[in-house]
Length: 586
Picture 1 (cartoon, rainbow, N blue to C red):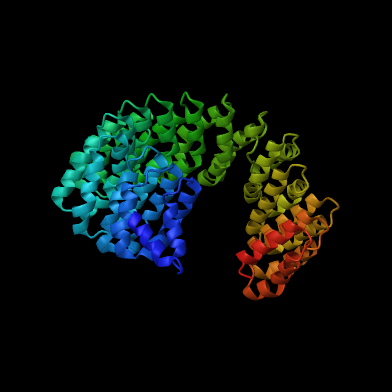
Picture 2 (cartoon, rainbow, N blue to C red):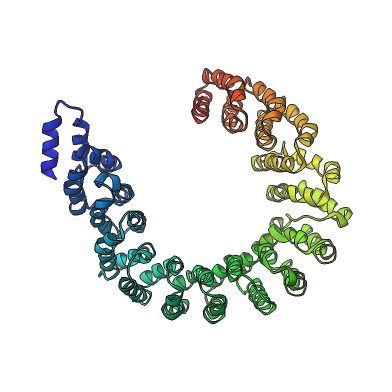
């Protein structure tokens, strides 16, 4: 490589390639930042050298010479994944394997992961013959390496090469993966467990049932919980690829073992992925539904609050995914009794997660069940003394009872309580109807626009955007635009900024015509505000508004405003105006 560098210097002392020689020199420089700069421009060096010299000299240099800081190696691993055309295309892509193989064995995880990502990318460029000649031997070396780092990296490469090799090599790959699943080092078994799902998707069904299933069950009962918890994803993958007839035999025992696992971290992962598991199981008869409901309620009653919270967060999704024929009875007889217990759970996190999804059950079970079973739960949670769990809604059948509690919470001294209620207003509007909402709750929404807490004001503008999407542009013109006009003239510049945020959200909800008619006149006014913060926020808002309006409006209305702001006396205003013009290609 030194010869390469000398040659380039001689050739380019007076020529345009001089910067390339500098970049090459920087590859050896003691300064990390200089090496990093050169690595980031590796493709420029390769283009200057040409494909043959890149293959014969640069790649060899990178393979043999560079042992560097992790930051440099990370960029190198990423760069090499895009090097296929720079080494002469698919016919020569195998020459990229040696440096990436080295990078896949380093100690730093993020570097190894990026090297594996690049290897997966260039695996697709190999022909089937080249894959067996070059790529598979590399996988074997990594899979049988002395260090756990190489064996861990190997786990991520099986799925990309397996479908494209012959039967004999496939059998060899399955055997190697089996050995990795039984590796003495937990980190390797963890890597094998993490990639088991994607490997299962490319295996033949016979191979899954006859060979893969035993590997799967071995890891489900692994002594390390960090391995077992990764098997939840593998359960989902297995369920999607094996015949339904084999699912009960192969997946169900694993699922039961994971649900009953002694480690709460494993049970937490099951709870977090339960709806995906449910979907993977597909069409279910009554017996399967009853078993799933039993597993789910066990998670809702788990001894660990984190597990109960994760399960509670998925109540709506679980109930929605149940087959319609069995759904209502399963919810009434099994889910709701547990929910009633969770309402008084000692763990506030659990009650908070329940509160965030409980209202979603109404549309699933229908009006009668909502009135009989859910509304008492809504009311109990609305009146809960804990701030985090007061963010649920009532329904039309209990307006008189629920509404006073909602209004009380909307004016609560704790800002987190108010914030929780703000975000639930669109759902309240859906259940209560526009007329009732306008009369009783819209005034409360308007007061939040001038709340002393910024998070409340921002959440209120987002809520009003969602309400506009629900109730339509005419409703926004009648109810919201006058408030925006009022706020845009308020003496408090924070309220004027809130008006701007509100108008920006409205433009995204109503489209071009109404934006031109109702939004842009107020925005133009705010572009002349005497406070620089308001003016530069106009520039930021115009980026979003500019993507809504037509090209003609962009040129005739928005471009002049940004041009004006671009000549502002304040540096920040000019900066954001320039950023906006760049973003909108003006």
